[in-house]
Image 1 (cartoon, helix red, strand yellow):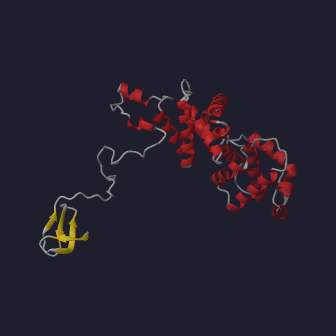
Image 2 (cartoon, rainbow, N blue to C red):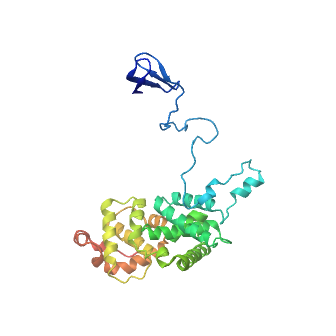
Image 3 (cartoon, rainbow, N blue to C red):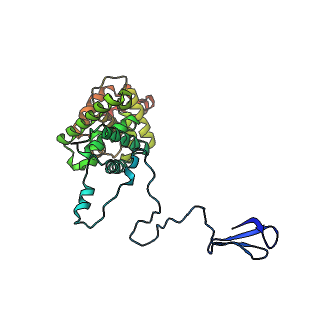
Length: 311
């Protein structure tokens, strides 16, 4: 790299070469070393990620988190698997804000959530911590409840079963676990509503349209079929179908697949939506009499609604 500088021997401005290997600034015309061991203030582009050493290759720490304050300066006790202090440091503790934030980040990654939802959930947890409302509570349940509320607030709703599955695993979803989770959601809403105002914790109302794109994508449905499902759910808003939004979304997907002759089975729809097959069938029976009203007009003309047989 070269630049212009004043040379004492040449007594004028000349081109100076910066030798970054030796740290010297050399005049290109007379060879005089104008400066030695200069400090390179440019960015260090190498990240040492290719090093095979066992230590962390990062040269800097994580970004400053305004919600953590001085807690990012804490000390982590190292040690082998048998170290009692290490086990103590890793123990889930609702009062450990940094551990809670890491738990929320891990859950958000497993649900493929955007950073704004994760940050919103962390903000809610920090408010609870400041109010000393996390004591005696299970960290994982509180973290999952904060994520559930944040998803609803950001218009990216997740079902209760989806969020519960990242706490205990999909096979461990049961009535008792979801009941505990719902209690945690209500607890957070009540606490923050009193301290922060209703606008801070306002969740809005979930509808079937909040779930359909994700469900259709997981089922591998085409763009056109996904669009028809969306229009059908939109038309359903005129009717008073007293079913949960998730059940309606699953039943409409099943209805469209019946009409298109898709090979997606009822079992696949139940697996992706986490709605029981019996619930999907019952909701489908509720929607079937209104098919000519809720389906897009082009579909009513192009499809034989007789394909919507009993299930």
